[in-house]
Image 1: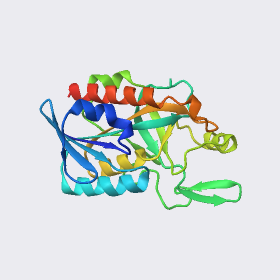
Image 2: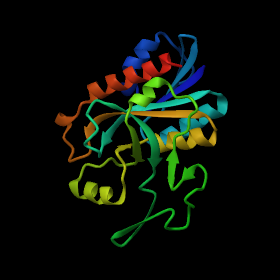
Image 3: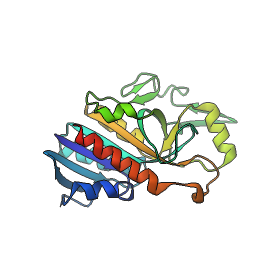
Length: 226
């Protein structure tokens, strides 16, 4: 199978890269590996929606894949999600896109700039879509993610956000990945491991190494089950 793994940073997938073995560098962002009969390209885009959109769009224009996997760490609004655990993102949203109207926020749908079901949106969200469902996926919590340019770290803004949105987690790339995957009609899976809860920023409470190892262990198990 030809697979593209997309990650914002190499830090988030270092154990996975080590497990894949020696690779061949294709360009400054993409490395090709052979692993158990699979052709696996690893694309490290850089942080955020803009970098992800550009490099993923360029890569999908130049190559055809059977499966896209987005891997990364995330902060959790939902305290039922354990730190260090890996989740399967089933829906992703773009909650910052819109306009302020005094104390209110108007989404693109409110502004009549987007219909609820304008492709690739469904109900204003982007839904993951895959016919490839390895067994490990069914062991993971299925979550809704919010893709943001500025992660939350202020109690007032967190409270305001959670009143408007029911997202379980937040990342800075997920919706851009799903948008590109659906437009290109490629099976897609987004995995996010919980490194911290969304709260006043305190890195002493974060569990980044645990999240990275959980993420990479789950991704490798997923590939082994293909």
